[in-house]
Amino acid sequence: MSNGNEKTVALVTGANKGIGYEIAAGLGALGWRVGVGARDEQRREAAVEKLRAAGADAFGVPLDVTDDASVTAAAALIEESEGRLDVLVNNAAITGSAPQAPTEVDPATVLAAVQTNVIGVIRVTNALLPLLRRSPSPRIVNMSSSVGSLTLQTRPGAETGPISAAYAPSKSFLNAVTVQYAKELADTPILINAACPGYVATDLNGFRGTRTPQQGAAIAVRLADLPDDGPTGAFFDDAGPVPW
Image (cartoon, rainbow, N blue to C red; front, side, top):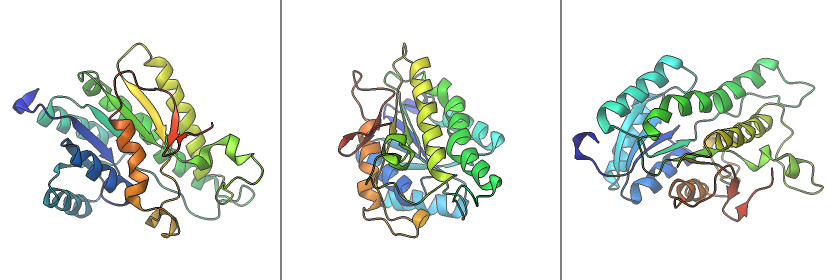
């Protein structure tokens, strides 16, 4: 590895605020070197400074998950500076604009949610897989949501969030893609899982959630640090497995 850096190297997308920031902080607290992936330069650099001030070994990675050139450049930056990647946390996501009732939704709203929440994850994961393959214990964590669980959505009395034709199905789609990656990568050391942070107060939901971003980040930190015999192709929250 270049620069003689033997630390575990992680990248968190959408890491300048909310749950993503707290995931980066949690990984930094493990003594890891953490890339803060974010589109906005000012917010990204502010997050890096804040993490460093708290003792984390953080560095900024300009990253728009919807843009091929941006993702390619991010992979090149990590290759040049770190030589490998050990952990990728695909956290960047959008809820999409209202209305999201299926009978009222603009198809462009659905497309935008899928572009970021699903296609963005595929784009970033595939660009970084060559670097992850250089790691002895590579981990991928896809930040999903229990609103993407078809089992919970169809269970009477379950808390399923607002009716949604864009955000919730995008997470169901992400879960399905995560399973397919796990199947393809089954004969490699790469462990890939989906994580639900719970209902966290972030600007994504107008801060209506009941959990802190730090609480929401805990499951991602745990799945990022799985032992080599840990699960893959599964879906977890703090309490354990989440039904598909």
